[in-house]
Picture 1 (cartoon, rainbow, N blue to C red):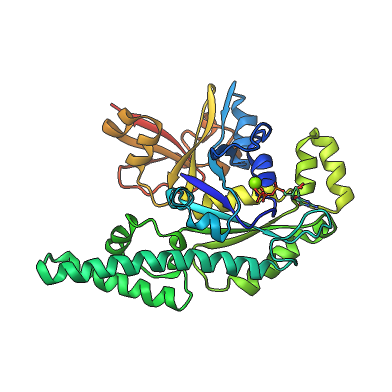
Picture 2: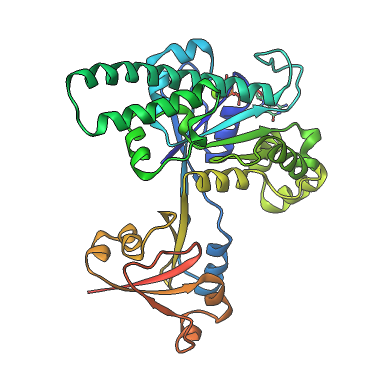
Length: 357
Ligand SMILES: Nc1nc2c(ncn2[C@@H]2O[C@H](COP(=O)(O)OP(=O)(O)OP(=O)(O)O)[C@@H](O)[C@H]2O)c(=O)[nH]1
Ligand SMILES: [Mg+2]
């Protein structure tokens, strides 16, 4: 699953991509190939379990990011640009909040809400064209043949059309599983989950949390599939160069309580509908990525396809309890190590041992 970093020109997309993924951006000037990079999902549970099990190998969950070229009317007319946008699973829209005399703003002034709305309008317009084209086609087909699904598709597309004409992104629609399936093939842009990344100036670093909260409350009340996270790109870039002690010092200087990057990654992971379960032993402590609501037997398949086929039970314990009891030897016989069957819905933070034949 991939999250595309989008936004207007010169808002800090590539800078954010670089610090998120650690991917060097040198040698990319003039390259038209999209850069894809991997970010590690920070996980305090993994860190805590490592202290008990002391394994030689530690594996975190990851999220993939794509660094997109700037969004503009011209770019949006290019089929390859649109195709790249359609292919991803979610967007991280970088909104410029930092002021700078040397970096020009496409629209001449700093106004993150206007920028968000402008880009949203482009996504909506693009989807509306796709909906209208498809509707024309469906209406034609309905005159010739009557498959049971065509009228349903027509109803659904008309619902989408009304929403889009009212400037409502498709991610806000309530869809049942069938309708979701019907829309999937269109890869609508305004249906994708959206993370708004506020790229703050250094002078705003000490208010990072408060600014994020303010925008969350003002912009996103009762909205689905959208989240906001604030970062201070230039400070994060400096932090990335330093060892932990120096980084802590620098954060103090800026009045930054915690790095914003981690929250960007966590929010991306969450918007994609993903969560982690854990495995822990002497050889490895590892976070495994599954969609929320996954059954134990499918989760076992994330580790190894054989585990899914030959699944018997999953020994399950919450990571915090495992920690409190001092590991598996302490947990045995306490009744806290439960045996769960195939249908068990894996919970965030479960530590599993799969029993298989
Ligand atoms: N002051 C300040 N400058 C920044 C910040 N983030 C990025 N910049 C500067 O803004 C310019 C553009 O940054 P990029 O990361 O290349 O922005 P972009 O959105 O990828 O730009 P395009 O891909 O060309 O649209 C660079 O000169 C950065 O140094 C920030 O948080 N603060
Ligand atoms: Mg860029």
